[in-house]
Image (cartoon, rainbow, N blue to C red; front, side):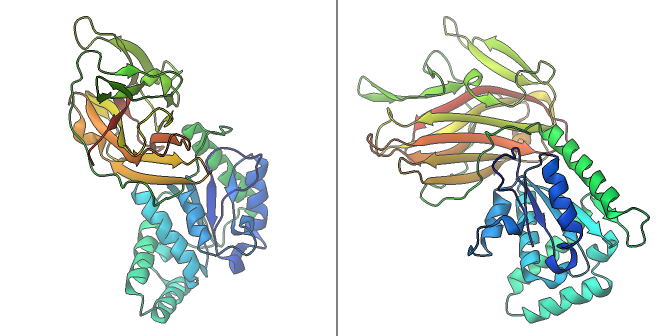
Length: 391
């Protein structure tokens, strides 16, 4: 089955574990789970789900996670739920939203990838039992071929290493990964939930070269649109008011000012020097926006000529937290490598409709990419513009 963390004292990215209960629950997992928790790693396994909850909730837990461990064991491919989890992990991985680490427990990686031996026979038997679900079984097979190609951790059946030694090395490896992600102990990690009431984000990337002072500076992350002479003026959450992870480290980000036109106010910008893990977050309140009006939130960025490490797309997220406590979210992905060498470009985070003034909402917009093996540089961040739109 699968895993992730519900212990309130554990912080940082949620680590979801997918495993076949009958193979490893009473032995390997019974040692791995507490070992990860002792290391203050935010782990979730299926036992952490609320009693009476639907098994489908586990797929939602994958969407809420940023790291997933897949424990491949002899009977893993005999479980339709394990394979549904695996297919969901592949989907999130391909979107750049999840880091997947395969663990081969008493199995050679080639047995999983090539569907050989008892492992392959069990999968083929399961596939025959679901002949009427061709799309579902095709996703299973694609995931079984794809995920084992990722660098993982094998433990051979005849290995001299004990489970305890193997688990200790896993904990060290995961801690190293978390160090790269640099979010351990940070309670600001946002829940990764999908919602359906927001305006779907459409692909909007257009170059802009903003002149003069049309941007109204934000204060304490509150970006407002005001009426000026009968028209609505856009505003911006400047780079300094965004939460740019590692921006205080001069080896990773550099801060400077630019003047885009004579007599205009200077803009403070953040230029990426070298990072692996990217996360930028901003927040506004809708109290002073125009009720019933659609607005777009766009990151204003550019990529310098020498920018590198942008082969994988970034994920853009816009979340609306309503006055009644409910929230909705829309995600999209963007290939920033397409804009290397361009001037400033708009990268759409999402579109939302402002609720009534007496029921204000909180809007959170995020740009992130969780890649630990691609060194990135050359991204320049000006801020996030909030504008009325005719979408």
